[in-house]
Amino acid sequence: MAGWRVLDPIAAAIVGFMVARMGRTFGWDALQDLSDRALDLAETDKLRVLLTSTPGVRDVHELRTRKMGDLAIVDAHILVDPLISVSEGHYIAESARARLLRNTRVFDALIHVDPENDQINPPPGRMPTRSAVDDAVSALLGAHGLTYNALNLHYLSSGFDIDVTLPADLSDD
Ligand SMILES: [Zn+2]
Image (spheres, protein in one colour):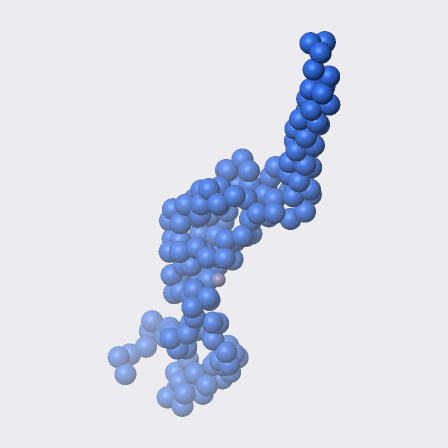
């Protein structure tokens, strides 16, 4: 209207460029949400703190998140005292999972319990099975006319430990 007709297509080109750029940004984000993507680092660090602050958890590794729309599925390895019972390890893992689920972004979580950091200490290779240990210990004790009440086996990278619980009514011999 002012007589500068050339400004019309220039303004149209600028607006067109802005619309195209916005479309590309939204399109890319939507595409990322449809494919597998992890939560951002700040969000992942919050989850790590939730796990490490759980009583009984010594450390966390292999913390992985996978976004499902706005929510995320989490899986993690927690390190616990290697000599506690299976039920205590399970209790600690369930407590850690419950803490994660309190975060509104977490849809589900799978917690794996490690007696040792398996990134540093690979799981021990060939170790005797419980039935082999049972046979050996029973034979040794049997030679002295003894039996046992319980066997507790610890498969660790530092070695293979066997706890033998004897009946309480044994004499000191
Ligand atoms: Zn692990």
